[in-house]
Image (cartoon, one colour):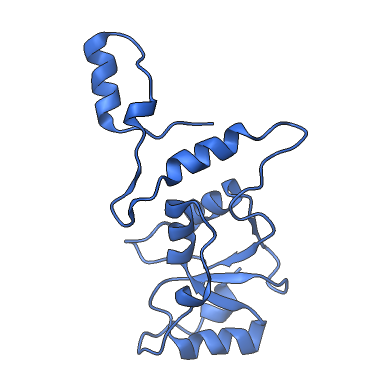
Length: 162
């Protein structure tokens, strides 16, 4: 299991010229969700894992479809793919397999319904993936489904999603 520590840990190690205990420097949350202790829970889950009995991962049993690209202010397709796989999820390459389509946050409810009609996929904001990781908890999907709005996807959207 890996420690996620503050920069103060590195500073202390340098000032003492030795590797100091990480525990008092482990971060307790992030700037979005404040104190969640998610890094600690994730680290401890990793320590309970053995070669014969691995601990269940965050996205175990879930299948995802990704768009070819996402807006530049969001993680790239490649980064999302890696996060999902490292979290135990599967990224589908076959467009006809079931799963969740990870969309940019501006997808409208109308576009999500079109995706569901054409492909049978539930559209979900990529913020769900990021929040699950930040909280080290599989969040309820309902609050991350597209809402009524005016954002629009280009016509290649349905064919480009994999």
